[in-house]
Length: 200
Length: 217
Image (cartoon, rainbow over all chains, first blue to last red; front, side):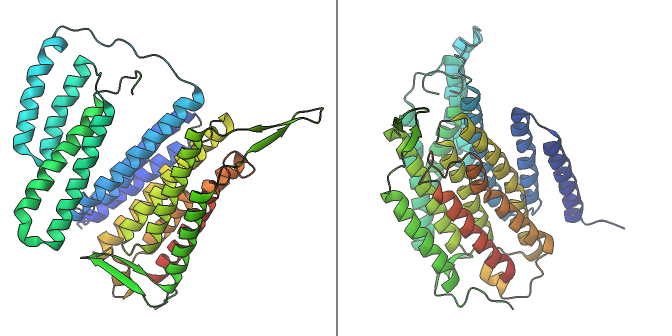
């Protein structure tokens, strides 16, 4: 007898859910509970991923965003309520981290722009992330955020062009491709600045 | 077919994704709209403490930045509730509900007080855990029926599994736990008032909506 793949996956997901909830029930330390909620988030993404169609991909992204934003909000609450205000360290002092970032970041950003779209944004964002991680960050975060916000708006505009004026689809493709490139790159580059400090 | 919402008054379609209002949901929508307006217009409550052993009392001031943040979160919560009332797509509904949860975390956590932050943290963990049944329920519905549109599901012909409905209800219960935690930190008396009312209202409204959805589909 062959068990259908979806049912098998569902079985595994339900088992994982049981394990995660059992762990949540047993754990009493606040910080470890926060870490365990991430386990539960992953199971909920697995439920969506089991659909296994293009729709699943479209549904996973908002699910992931919701989980991440709640995790960030809760970590911030935990940090404030426990009063953790340790000043950031100077970071690693390695020679490679002085010379390599410029070249690697430039290569990755150029290749990302060539790729364009979501994957291009990830590649270019990786370059910027690496640069910020190695060289420190005295950047203006409002600028990065503003660029990200405007490009998101352009992405939405492109979607409206798809729906209302389908004959201009090529323009909309170009617009959404470049806008999502900038947006993903800007968002990812922020990870490179997560080392504490006055702006972080 | 149980139809507790009545005939749709207005339907806005974006392909498969749609928004609609029935006499039932428009009532909930208007209620959320009125309270969002009240949250915009109202000023924060001042907590009055009596100095022990004397006639003196002092009023705690709320700083402008803190007031702005709370008001912003209350408005965001109201907007998310408005979206959850009008959405005709099951997954959009779950997203709006989790947005209500995030905004509620913000409303509760805006008060810089150890007890309140403890309560906000506990609620946040419940809200995060609740996203599992919420998204899991929507995912089970789309996997078994192939559609997320509530009118299509309500039209019949689909066997929506009971576990999916239970998951949806369970998820909304988790996200709607905010008033319990706000009450635990005694926020209704002063520190969070009046914006903390949005917690109660949004929880009530998403409960009422999910009951309608679960019975209809």
